[in-house]
Image (cartoon, rainbow, N blue to C red; front, side, top):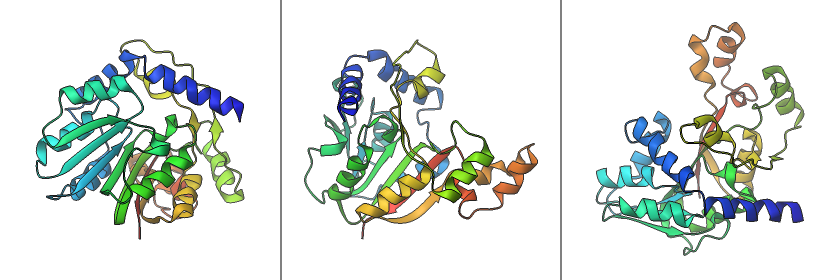
Amino acid sequence: MNNLKNIDSKVREILNSNQLYYEMLEQWHDLKGGLAVEPEVRSFIEAACEPGARVLEAGAGSGSITNWFAARYKDTHFLGVDISRIGVAIARKKAPANASFQVGDLKTLPLKDQAFHFAFAQSVLEHVVGWEDAVADLYRVLMPNGKLLLRLENGGVQNVSRQRALLNYLLGQNHNDIESPSFELKNGNWTDHEHNFDVNQIPSDLLLKALRRVGFGISYFSTGTSHWRNSKNRGARVVSFLEFWPFNHLGRISIVLAAKP
């Protein structure tokens, strides 16, 4: 327990002192035309951007995603929350009138109950010590019939063979691996930016269980296995057509749309 508290404190310290991390987040989205998200993620967020709707980005980073959508959906109200004062300061500089940002812990969001129609977190839970508490608090701030979109690395397949990953899912042997991040980062090193700040390796089956445990229903789930249909690897091509448990858990990225009753 003390070790988790130490890691949590270190994450907070680094994310409130590493300007480069947040500058590189901006650069990454700029390199991708302003919005670096998967097509499914974009379409789910766009579907939520109705006039008068309140949309929350949990772990907004430098604000690039929220500001991109806010500039295009001016009748939707956006709020981005991040643990870092640096990230929030960067986000506010480019925020349209219908977007605001504030500092906050995702495990104890400084927000009212049932305040949002839609919430999303893009590559965020990997960095949150106590990510299950963040899932529970996101449930709290969503209105009835509200939806939560999560995108994160599928920790169940990151460091094992596909065969071993399949067995782990079949036998229920997956667990969340807590890591001690290196926090090493050099400008332009996207590999370190993507991985060296991760605290968790969250398998997709544990993610779905955590969502269901707090009351969410699952509306959409994918780890991207269908994209393997043009792979040169015969096994990958076969798996791409087996879009059912546990084969549908073998992809690298988890994208989940969950609904609050």
